[in-house]
Image 1 (cartoon, rainbow, N blue to C red):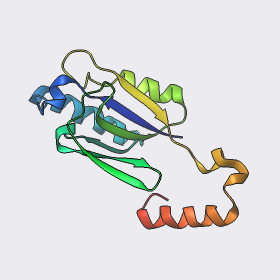
Image 2 (image 1 turned 90 degrees about the vertical axis):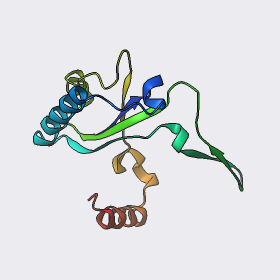
Image 3 (image 1 turned 60 degrees about the vertical axis):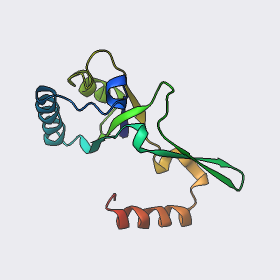
Image 4 (image 1 turned 45 degrees about the vertical axis):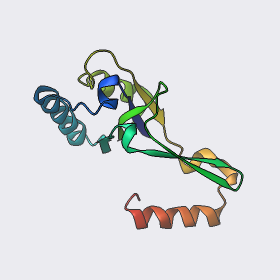
Length: 139
């Protein structure tokens, strides 16, 4: 199963404060362990929302909203993992160095897979999806 690990933003990450050398070293070692175990598929930190934008959809209308954003639950980074179970993902995450100074939350979310859609994913749609995955290197 694939899971996305969502690292919640902090006041420091939203201010653009970069991690110190010790945290960078600890996170690199952690990422290396994930990669060596075949768990890590992707992972990146995200720039503050002040450097981003949102697009609000309302029917046919699109409204661009420039950052920064101030609500709770903003995301500062992510990992994409391949694990055997949610329990395995939790175990891996419990080994993670604290990715932020102070208190933070990190969320684990399972990705949808073709089997989750049952009969809604027709053979034709499955074939198109398979072609897209091959084209993007996500086969």
